[in-house]
Image (tube, rainbow, N blue to C red; front, side):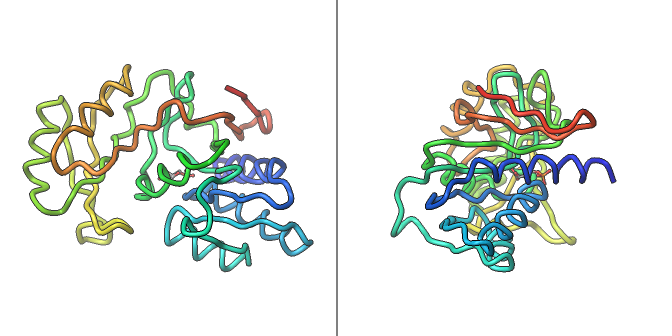
Length: 224
Ligand code: DER
Protein backbone atom coordinates (compact mmCIF):
# COMPACT_ATOMS: atom_id res chain seq x y z
CA UNK A 1 0.00 0.00 0.00
CA UNK A 2 1.27 3.52 -0.75
CA UNK A 3 2.74 4.30 2.69
CA UNK A 4 5.03 1.28 2.37
CA UNK A 5 6.07 2.45 -1.09
CA UNK A 6 6.96 5.85 0.40
CA UNK A 7 8.94 4.16 3.20
CA UNK A 8 10.81 2.02 0.68
CA UNK A 9 11.68 5.08 -1.45
CA UNK A 10 13.14 6.91 1.55
CA UNK A 11 14.95 3.88 2.96
CA UNK A 12 16.61 2.98 -0.34
CA UNK A 13 17.62 6.61 -1.06
CA UNK A 14 19.54 6.81 2.22
CA UNK A 15 21.93 4.11 1.03
CA UNK A 16 23.32 6.63 -1.52
CA UNK A 17 25.03 8.34 1.44
CA UNK A 18 26.86 5.24 2.66
CA UNK A 19 30.46 5.27 1.39
CA UNK A 20 32.91 2.36 1.21
CA UNK A 21 34.63 1.71 4.52
CA UNK A 22 31.99 3.52 6.62
CA UNK A 23 30.94 2.60 10.16
CA UNK A 24 27.14 2.86 10.07
CA UNK A 25 24.54 3.14 12.83
CA UNK A 26 21.60 0.92 11.88
CA UNK A 27 18.29 2.32 13.15
CA UNK A 28 15.05 0.47 13.71
CA UNK A 29 11.61 0.23 12.15
CA UNK A 30 9.83 -0.64 8.92
CA UNK A 31 11.39 2.23 6.93
CA UNK A 32 14.91 1.27 8.00
CA UNK A 33 14.07 -2.29 6.91
CA UNK A 34 14.17 -1.12 3.25
CA UNK A 35 17.52 0.66 3.84
CA UNK A 36 18.99 -2.54 5.28
CA UNK A 37 17.68 -4.64 2.39
CA UNK A 38 19.22 -2.26 -0.17
CA UNK A 39 22.48 -2.02 1.82
CA UNK A 40 22.69 -5.81 1.84
CA UNK A 41 22.59 -5.80 -1.97
CA UNK A 42 25.51 -3.36 -2.11
CA UNK A 43 27.46 -5.39 0.44
CA UNK A 44 26.94 -8.42 -1.81
CA UNK A 45 28.37 -6.34 -4.69
CA UNK A 46 31.47 -5.58 -2.62
CA UNK A 47 30.68 -2.50 -0.51
CA UNK A 48 32.74 -2.61 2.68
CA UNK A 49 30.78 -1.41 5.75
CA UNK A 50 30.43 -2.30 9.43
CA UNK A 51 27.20 -1.61 11.27
CA UNK A 52 26.05 -1.28 14.87
CA UNK A 53 22.41 -2.30 15.39
CA UNK A 54 19.99 -0.30 17.54
CA UNK A 55 17.67 -3.24 18.27
CA UNK A 56 17.54 -7.02 18.27
CA UNK A 57 15.13 -6.88 15.31
CA UNK A 58 17.51 -4.73 13.29
CA UNK A 59 20.30 -7.12 14.19
CA UNK A 60 18.30 -10.05 12.82
CA UNK A 61 17.61 -8.14 9.59
CA UNK A 62 21.29 -7.18 9.25
CA UNK A 63 22.29 -10.81 9.63
CA UNK A 64 19.65 -11.85 7.10
CA UNK A 65 21.07 -9.32 4.61
CA UNK A 66 24.68 -10.25 5.50
CA UNK A 67 25.64 -6.76 6.66
CA UNK A 68 28.83 -7.07 8.77
CA UNK A 69 28.26 -6.01 12.36
CA UNK A 70 30.54 -4.53 15.01
CA UNK A 71 29.93 -3.05 18.46
CA UNK A 72 31.00 -0.21 20.72
CA UNK A 73 33.84 -2.23 22.24
CA UNK A 74 35.60 -1.81 18.87
CA UNK A 75 34.04 1.44 17.64
CA UNK A 76 33.39 4.63 19.58
CA UNK A 77 32.31 6.95 16.75
CA UNK A 78 30.21 6.07 13.72
CA UNK A 79 30.46 7.88 10.37
CA UNK A 80 26.73 7.85 9.66
CA UNK A 81 23.54 6.71 11.37
CA UNK A 82 20.31 6.07 9.47
CA UNK A 83 17.08 5.78 11.47
CA UNK A 84 13.34 6.24 11.30
CA UNK A 85 11.00 8.46 13.29
CA UNK A 86 7.41 8.67 14.43
CA UNK A 87 7.14 12.46 14.15
CA UNK A 88 9.45 15.08 12.59
CA UNK A 89 8.88 18.80 13.29
CA UNK A 90 10.13 21.73 11.15
CA UNK A 91 13.28 22.05 13.32
CA UNK A 92 14.05 18.35 12.78
CA UNK A 93 13.18 17.55 16.41
CA UNK A 94 11.76 14.01 16.58
CA UNK A 95 9.49 11.74 18.49
CA UNK A 96 10.88 8.22 18.29
CA UNK A 97 10.21 4.97 20.09
CA UNK A 98 7.10 3.64 18.40
CA UNK A 99 9.07 0.47 17.77
CA UNK A 100 10.37 0.29 21.34
CA UNK A 101 14.07 0.84 20.55
CA UNK A 102 14.46 4.50 21.52
CA UNK A 103 17.24 4.01 24.10
CA UNK A 104 19.68 2.15 21.85
CA UNK A 105 18.64 4.34 18.90
CA UNK A 106 19.58 7.44 20.89
CA UNK A 107 22.91 5.90 21.95
CA UNK A 108 23.77 4.90 18.38
CA UNK A 109 22.62 8.19 16.87
CA UNK A 110 24.44 10.27 19.50
CA UNK A 111 27.72 8.53 18.66
CA UNK A 112 27.56 9.21 14.94
CA UNK A 113 29.10 12.10 13.00
CA UNK A 114 25.93 12.42 10.91
CA UNK A 115 22.31 11.32 11.33
CA UNK A 116 19.90 10.78 8.44
CA UNK A 117 16.21 10.20 9.18
CA UNK A 118 14.18 8.23 6.66
CA UNK A 119 10.39 8.49 6.71
CA UNK A 120 7.18 8.53 4.74
CA UNK A 121 5.59 11.96 4.48
CA UNK A 122 2.98 11.21 7.15
CA UNK A 123 5.67 11.61 9.82
CA UNK A 124 5.99 15.34 9.14
CA UNK A 125 4.18 17.51 11.73
CA UNK A 126 4.10 21.20 12.64
CA UNK A 127 4.27 20.50 16.38
CA UNK A 128 5.33 17.26 18.08
CA UNK A 129 2.97 15.45 20.39
CA UNK A 130 0.02 13.95 18.57
CA UNK A 131 1.96 10.68 18.66
CA UNK A 132 2.16 9.53 22.31
CA UNK A 133 5.69 10.11 23.60
CA UNK A 134 7.44 6.81 24.45
CA UNK A 135 9.37 7.00 27.74
CA UNK A 136 11.52 4.05 28.85
CA UNK A 137 11.28 3.50 32.62
CA UNK A 138 12.71 1.13 35.23
CA UNK A 139 10.32 -1.73 35.96
CA UNK A 140 10.83 -1.21 39.69
CA UNK A 141 8.40 1.44 40.92
CA UNK A 142 7.12 2.29 37.42
CA UNK A 143 3.73 3.25 38.91
CA UNK A 144 5.35 6.12 40.85
CA UNK A 145 7.22 7.24 37.74
CA UNK A 146 3.92 7.22 35.85
CA UNK A 147 2.31 9.36 38.55
CA UNK A 148 5.11 11.92 38.24
CA UNK A 149 4.59 12.04 34.47
CA UNK A 150 0.88 12.69 35.06
CA UNK A 151 1.93 15.77 37.06
CA UNK A 152 3.75 16.95 33.90
CA UNK A 153 0.46 16.86 32.05
CA UNK A 154 0.41 13.51 30.28
CA UNK A 155 -1.64 10.34 30.39
CA UNK A 156 0.99 7.54 30.56
CA UNK A 157 -0.07 4.09 29.35
CA UNK A 158 2.07 1.02 30.07
CA UNK A 159 2.89 -0.51 26.69
CA UNK A 160 1.69 -4.03 26.10
CA UNK A 161 2.51 -6.42 23.26
CA UNK A 162 0.57 -9.62 22.45
CA UNK A 163 -1.40 -9.29 25.66
CA UNK A 164 1.55 -8.97 28.05
CA UNK A 165 3.60 -6.02 29.26
CA UNK A 166 6.26 -5.03 26.69
CA UNK A 167 9.85 -5.36 27.93
CA UNK A 168 12.53 -3.47 25.94
CA UNK A 169 15.85 -4.93 24.74
CA UNK A 170 17.26 -3.32 27.89
CA UNK A 171 14.82 -5.07 30.26
CA UNK A 172 12.73 -1.96 30.98
CA UNK A 173 9.11 -0.92 30.52
CA UNK A 174 7.83 1.73 28.12
CA UNK A 175 5.16 4.29 29.03
CA UNK A 176 3.40 5.85 26.04
CA UNK A 177 2.64 9.36 27.26
CA UNK A 178 -0.06 11.40 25.54
CA UNK A 179 1.00 15.05 25.86
CA UNK A 180 -1.13 16.13 22.85
CA UNK A 181 1.24 18.97 22.00
CA UNK A 182 4.99 19.41 22.76
CA UNK A 183 6.02 22.91 21.61
CA UNK A 184 9.26 22.82 23.65
CA UNK A 185 10.75 19.32 23.27
CA UNK A 186 14.04 20.11 25.03
CA UNK A 187 12.30 21.50 28.11
CA UNK A 188 9.96 18.53 28.41
CA UNK A 189 12.80 16.07 27.83
CA UNK A 190 14.86 17.65 30.61
CA UNK A 191 11.91 17.57 33.03
CA UNK A 192 11.24 13.90 32.24
CA UNK A 193 14.89 12.89 32.54
CA UNK A 194 15.00 14.30 36.07
CA UNK A 195 12.26 11.94 37.25
CA UNK A 196 13.57 8.98 39.27
CA UNK A 197 12.93 5.84 37.22
CA UNK A 198 13.05 7.48 33.79
CA UNK A 199 15.77 5.88 31.66
CA UNK A 200 15.31 7.86 28.42
CA UNK A 201 12.65 9.66 26.39
CA UNK A 202 11.66 9.42 22.73
CA UNK A 203 12.38 13.14 22.25
CA UNK A 204 15.38 13.57 19.93
CA UNK A 205 16.37 17.21 19.47
CA UNK A 206 19.34 18.82 17.68
CA UNK A 207 20.54 15.44 16.40
CA UNK A 208 19.35 15.27 12.79
CA UNK A 209 21.42 16.45 9.80
CA UNK A 210 19.20 15.30 6.94
CA UNK A 211 15.67 14.03 6.42
CA UNK A 212 14.76 11.86 3.44
CA UNK A 213 11.00 11.84 2.92
CA UNK A 214 9.08 9.54 0.60
CA UNK A 215 5.78 10.76 -0.83
CA UNK A 216 3.60 10.96 -3.97
CA UNK A 217 5.99 13.54 -5.54
CA UNK A 218 8.87 11.10 -5.06
CA UNK A 219 11.76 11.26 -2.62
CA UNK A 220 12.62 14.61 -1.04
CA UNK A 221 15.99 15.22 0.65
CA UNK A 222 15.96 18.04 3.20
CA UNK A 223 19.18 19.22 4.83
CA UNK A 224 19.13 20.93 8.22
O1 DER B 1 10.81 3.39 17.12
C1 DER B 1 11.34 4.17 16.30
O2 DER B 1 11.78 5.30 16.62
C2 DER B 1 11.44 3.71 14.89
O3 DER B 1 12.34 4.50 14.19
C3 DER B 1 10.06 3.68 14.28
O4 DER B 1 9.09 4.27 15.10
C4 DER B 1 9.96 4.32 12.91
O5 DER B 1 8.72 3.97 12.40
P1 DER B 1 8.56 3.20 11.00
O6 DER B 1 8.38 1.75 11.32
O7 DER B 1 7.35 3.85 10.41
O8 DER B 1 9.82 3.43 10.18
